[in-house]
Structures are given as structure tokens and as C-alpha cells.
Length: 391
Picture 1 (tube, helix red, strand yellow):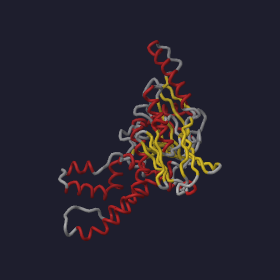
Picture 2 (cartoon, rainbow, N blue to C red):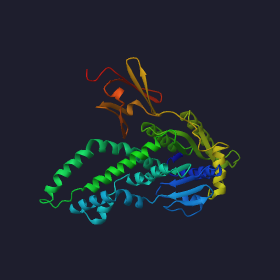
Picture 3 (cartoon, rainbow, N blue to C red):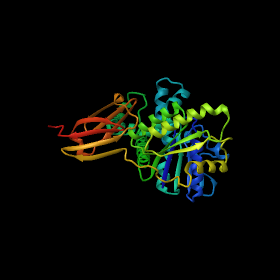
Picture 4 (cartoon, rainbow, N blue to C red):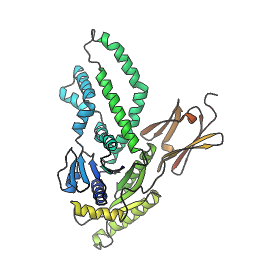
């Protein structure tokens, strides 16, 4: 199975690119499912066909789905949401407000992709293409498994044990709602699903991410930040797609300055995202709606190439044995050392970059060594481990 995520700033044309790619994959005989996780759900508009929360056929070898986040929340968050709602109402919150507060920020993004693991296990499709929400929402989604992992490993078992011991006694003295075993079971099940999702999305033999952008300054800057983040959390990016490039055959003087600006930023994208392959799609003279136009866009982007091909492969994290220890190499494109902070705590390497933090569980070979040196060389963070931190 092949899984490709399309991400980028809102409005750059992710849905069009994802839909066009799906058309091309289906034309090549691959059973293809294209999924929208964006609350705006523009996939139906792109295909000019009603697509809902259930998988629907869009033609030969092609299916579509627009995830119903509310249904996914009910299915995956129900018992937990029920307890939080009950607790908030006990604390005096209005029931409507309690309902809203019982769904944490970022949960919508997480639940929208939990079905991915099920599709992967069933293996009923050759290719799954995911039209992601705008960059910020996607980054929260992809960071969620790491955040949940920290909670589950550090706090969850302690909380569960404490409440199990306290609940039989406490319920006779206080009327405050306490989480039941079913709440903890739901949390554990949700965590396992999130871990499963992360394993699939970071499997470089299966998944990759493609960044969609327009040749504009602010869009490119956001794409660079996204690339840094994705590398930090171990996700593989195998291409950049520049959308809405004004064609050379447009000679209207109104577009002369725009064409100069776009040429400048296209050259910038080529230079700063190198060695990632860069694909281009021209600005069309009409809305890209329907299979015929989507197929044309796909051929413009990929030419005769198979869109499911891995256009670039590189391990985001690599560990190499060196004299007297090991060196961990972490690819961090566009990062600056001023924004980086890292330390080792127990068996974890903790890396903070701007507002993001990742806890990396060190292999046994490194876990008891001392972090001797860390350097950012170009796009690569090199961390040298040696000696013994117990000495």
C-alpha cells in the first residue's frame, strides 16, 4: 500500500492537487481512496460529486471520503467526553459549554485520521491520498502521538492505579464524579490507535508527505517551517508542488510584475528545498472542477511519472557508530541554532524547537551514554554520545 499526505497553507490548492493525483493513480489501474480531513471538505466541490462520511465510488478504481469529525469523536472519545462533561457540569458549567470544553483543541484532527490504520490493515486499497487540513492543524495532528506517548508512559498508569484504589472509598464521601475503568480503557484504546497511525505514517516504505505551495513569500516561509517540523517528528517529505504558476504564454501586461515575482520565488523554492524534487502546476484559465480538468492538472504535475513513486528518500533520523561512541543525525531543514534547545533526561533525548518539543526514546546503546556535543551543520543536527553518564 502507498499513502501520501498533502499539506500546505490554507488556500494553496491542496485539495485540487490531492484530487488530481487520485485521478492519475486510478488511471494507472491502482485502487485509490482519496480522503479529506479538512473541516471545509472541498473534495466534493473538486469532483463536482457529493462525497460523504462513508466511502463512495467516484469511478473506475477511485473512491472518496470526507471524514465526519463529529462521528469520529463520538466513536473514539465518547466515554472520555462523557466523564469530562459530567465533571464540568458538577463544577457548575452550563451543559452546552461543558459539551464544547469536553473536546480538546486538536482532537478533531487526530480523530479524522484514526481510520487510516484500519484501511492499512485491511489492505483493500493500493493507494490512499489524504487531503489534510491547513498546515497548523496538520502539525498538531502529527505531533499528537508523541504528546500522548509522554502522558501514557509517565502519568497514565499512576492515575489509573490511584483512582482504582480511591474510588470505592471516595464514592461514599464525595459526590464528585470520578473516572471509571471504562474511561481509562477508552484512553488506552485511543492511544494505541494513535500509535498505530504514527507507525504507518512514519513507515518510509509506505508513507510520505508532499508540501503544496504557491510562489509567494508568506506561503514559502510556512512551507519551510512545516518541513522543519515534519523532519523533527520523523515524517518523510518526498516532494514539493508549486501550484498556480502563471504560464509563459500569458502576455497580458497586467501579469508582467506577477510573473517576475513568481520566477524569483520559484528559484528560491528550487534552491532552499534542494534536493527535494519540485513539481509545478500552472494557473488554469478556469476553476479546476471535474475529472477531465483534474486529470489534465495531474499530467502537468507528474508527466509520465507514477504519482505513487517515492520521489525522494532520506532517513530523518540516523545513528552511526563512531570511535568511542555514537553520533545521532537528525535532519532539521531551515532550523537555526538560536531556536534549538536539547537535553537528555533518563533514557530520552528531548529536543525543543521554537514552540515544538519532541521526546525521542534513545536506543539502549545510547541511553546510558553522555551527550558530549551537539552541532547544527547545515540542515543536520549532529549529537555525539560517548562515555557513561553514570561514571
